[in-house]
Every structure is written in C-alpha cells, then in structure tokens.
Length: 378
Image 1 (cartoon, rainbow, N blue to C red):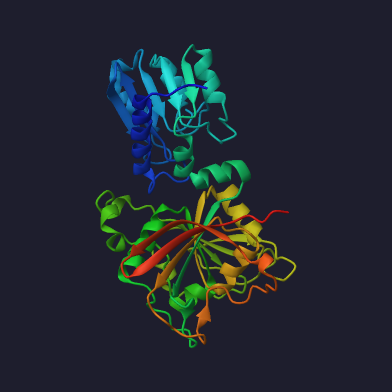
Image 2 (cartoon, one colour):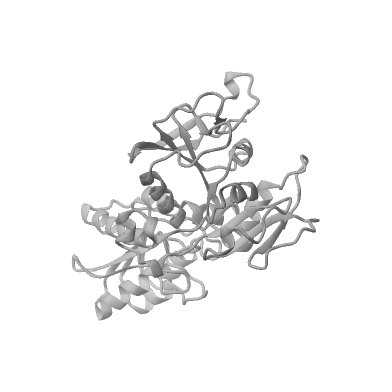
C-alpha cells in the first residue's frame, strides 16, 4: 500500500474543496475536483460545474497548459474512460503527458469501474488510488448509491416541537420552526436532484416545493446567483388525482413528475409528466418501485422528502430512508397534537428503530438533528 506524504494529503484536500463548489449544480453527475502539480507547485486546478460541460480534469489541464508534462494530477474520482457528452478524461490526461495520477476513489459507474485507471496504466502513467477515500465517498452519496444499487439516496426532512408534534390537533403548523431553519431547508433543497411529497401536502399547504434564491442562506447566495439556481425535479405522489390547476405548484419553475398507479385514469395537468407505478398489497403506491423508477429512468441521485406522517412512516418502515434531517423547535404543543410518524405498531423494545446521530447543531432558535437508521441484522 502506498505511503502518502503530507503534501499529497494537502493536494487531495484541495481537490476535495474544489469539488464541493459543484454541489448545487452538477446533478446528476458527481462532484469532482482536480489539482495538477508540477515540481511541488499547483499549475492547474478545476472542478466539474454542470452535466454536459467539461469535467474537473479538463479545467485543470486548460489552466496548466504545457506544464502538464511530467506533472501529477490529484483527482477526487477516477477519470472517466468512456465517451458521453464529453470526451474521456483518462484520454485527455494521457495526451497531456502527465506522469502520475492520484485518485481518491474508483468510479462506481459501471461504464468506468476501473477502466479509467487501466487506460492510464497501459499508457505508462503511474496511478495510485485511495488517498482521502472516505472524504471522497462522503462527497457523492447519491451518485454512489445510484451507481451501485439503482436506488437514490433519500433524505427525510421533518420538523417538530420539542414534544414531538408536527401540528396542532386542528392541523395548523405554520410556522413551527424559525426563519433560519426554513432557510436551511432551502439549502438542502438546492442540493437535491428531486423533492418528493404527496398531493395531500401540496394541497394542504399550497406548496411550490422549489428553491427560492432570496430565501437561501447567505453563504450559498454568496457563491450562487439567482440564474445559477438548479431547480430540483418535484415529484408528487398523487394516487387519487387531487392536484387541481389552481395550485401554486404549477406556476413555480422546474420539472414536475406526478406519480400515480398503472391503471389510473384521472386527468393530469399539462405541465406535469406522469410516472406510473404499481400498487402494493395494501393498495398504496409502491414506494420502492417509485424510487427505483426515479433513479433508473430519470437519473435522480438524491431525493429530499417533505411530506406528512403517513409517507414518513411508510418510508421508514420499508427502510427506504438513508438520512433523517429533523428540526426541533423550542415549543410545546401537547399530546393532542399530530405526531411525527403516528403509530409504528411496536410491542417490544427489541423492535425499536435505532439511529446514529451524525450531526447536531443549532439553527436559529431550533436544533437540527441529522441521523441515519441503523440497519437491523437478520
């Protein structure tokens, strides 16, 4: 196993920081950064901005010019080896006559999957893989999961009072959380490939479910203009055809997919594209099939879910949630309010769903908890 120097770590860390600049724009492509070093000096660097545009390596090579010859390239993801909307980066690095390529990780895309590394090695370029691999994995959870499993990375957003209620008994819920928390949600929306909700939630809240630049956190607005905002696809589960033409949903920018069952006959809005999935044994839309369809047919890596207790419970019970983002407001609403999930039907402590808390911080007056479900052992 290769022994990486402090300098190697610094260069890959720089490449990872560059890659993060694309987190709001690259979907469905992965976030990738590249640094090219000649004689201990950075001569070129870049990151992938947007699908269909040049990859990180191309930006770095353009900046470096002729100084790529004999240089070392640090890349957060294995250089691609296939022709897509852009030429293969492995070929570009070969033509640029770099001497060495250090990759943080192999590309999980079956079209690449080691082929880029092999292409470089066959051209006589030294290749090392694994530097800051865990950090690189954390950069693209949605892309990696879709490539490996055909399913998207699913984040479930919830907001509740300190006593676990999402609304009063009469349904009133605006606003449980602080303005700062709502801005934080806009930031999460901006990273997602799709926002998933139900027709009930859309109708009850007359929700648009889009990204609004004016409501983004200031640190995001500082690096992304209104014109650069990428609107996630809005996916609405609408088994019974509740979405009427008067809703604000239709006026907001961005693609809309409405999900109904295969034999549904209700009228669809002309703005939306219909997605048909089968019903499960309970007569509900098959959620696993829905997520699989969004991933495989619509290239969606990352889904942000904003909905009520029924959908939240179903996703969790079926172990379709990768991460929960919960905002807890310093308010008490009483036991007659509406809970986060409703009944889970648990009778033994051994059946309780356990979580790993991965992040905990204050956002405005609220506490934001990020947690992952622990997988139950068979």
